[in-house]
Length: 423
Figure 1 (cartoon, one colour):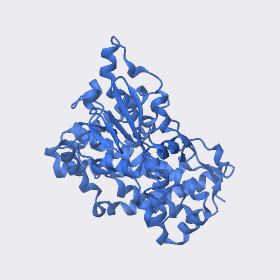
Figure 2 (spheres, one colour; figure 1 turned 180 degrees about the horizontal axis):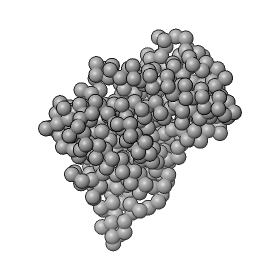
Figure 3 (cartoon, rainbow, N blue to C red; figure 1 turned 45 degrees about the vertical axis):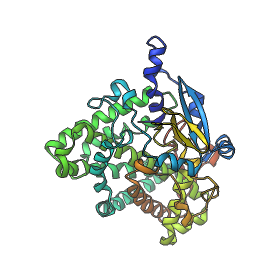
Figure 4 (cartoon, helix red, strand yellow; figure 1 turned 120 degrees about the horizontal axis):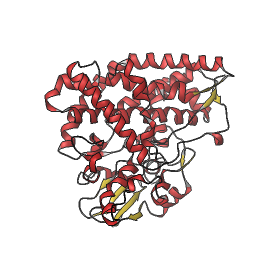
């Protein structure tokens, strides 16, 4: 679920009670006091965010119907908040029907606390070990090659310009995650249409909640089907290994979480990372010619871009002091990952600087809710960027960087399109 939808929905009970039954979930606009941290200047944090970080990396963002929301922009402070096991991410008690633990739209690891989180993650983690993921390498390489061919064909068929989002950045992780989940071919087009809308907050929360519900309904149906005929992917494997330990609702939530973490985020990284690489030709050349440089370049792109803009919100279960500020019990803490990952006090800062220190970032979060699919994402990026650079060493942007259109007010930041010339 998109996180600002979660923040807003978390206070719906209080709002409805105080306003005579008015349902604010039908609001078509997120208040600017909540939305401005989702705005960037191209791929960079805005001056407003940087100024907030320099002034105080822990600041009250707003007060909303009796709840305090805090914005965390410092690296050390964000790690402290995200790593504190006493904070909660479980928003389901505030979600009405959407939060019903048996029938709702909200589930999965991101919105559960221990011990339930521990139980579910234990079932999912074995599918994301390096040993288990290694089986996907040949398929990932094959997917990348096919999409490179499609990219070349698209350029030849047109005026030499091709949209890399449509031919490469989106299809590669989409096909990988479908393979991972074990979705049959005939289901994939339906699944594809349920993706990006869930993270888009430009029209408020209603559309996002609807997308989440549709996606979850699809995966619940697929989980029920595979309960009787387990497929070759993650869903089928969990059913074979631990089917008696998990119901269809929870397994559908795990599959939905894998979809969220593995598709839209990787697609955004591939597109935005390519923009940065094309503006730094020496890195583009290095990817094509020096295999040993790939790991450091990928880590630096992750640090620079941190496409998941806000981590899962943390609810303070008790009074806590962060960065010298007393944060009251019940307050919501929002860690801003792009700004924290560029904090000059603890990271290489704003400059593009591939080196070992680049791994000092929060692109995958931190603590209990660190992205379980981080190694899969790295595997895809380490394979895709060099293959793209080798195949199209003279590729360049087909428009001025200032003309690129980015997602507006989206939890997962990305590009609407990436027009390029291949030669």
